[in-house]
Length: 283
Image 1: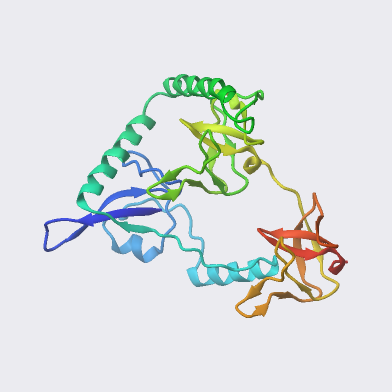
Image 2: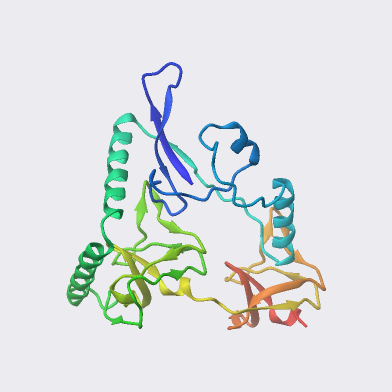
């Protein structure tokens, strides 16, 4: 979750939250029930969370963090610290506009699904018609699956949202982003739309998600028979600071089983985003 805040004429509380957004960059609906992961002391000590239904206790936060680091290390994943930008300051004028946009989005989301589907089906027709007058890389084909309007698809990978031209959709200056495990409801009976040679599902008005992000990619676990360096897709060794990242002999690594990538004169398994290990290093 993240939020935008602004200033107000109140000495006791000079700042206030203007809009709160969920993990999918949609405004939080005060009429919906959300599942929140937080520390137990916040539930016990804050009036906002008092009375919330406790679903599960997932353990001590320090243990969870340590276990995450161990798991990432065992899987051979490079541990990074992304900039989350959970809060953003805006002027009171900007806050008014964002509040209006959030309310408009909530009102739109509350409309009946039949009205939404009718409007969005019309938009897909107009996209396909317009593609005849643009480059051949724009939308040229629609393929339908046997799919009902009430069915959902689970994202198997984190996914960005794109517009009809294959450009990333921005919201509050950030790329609109859906997390792995989120559920999407494809429109137009899950017609697959081709944009710049990639297949997409339409999930909203001029909003599309790549079909590839709904497909489970097969992986296998292999053991290293030699110490192995990590390489980028350009064939250069990956470094952590000034030291090359080295995985020790005997370590088990999860690799993408469906393809072996050739970089230069060597063959590699991909183990992560822009992370490769030479095939020769595995048993």
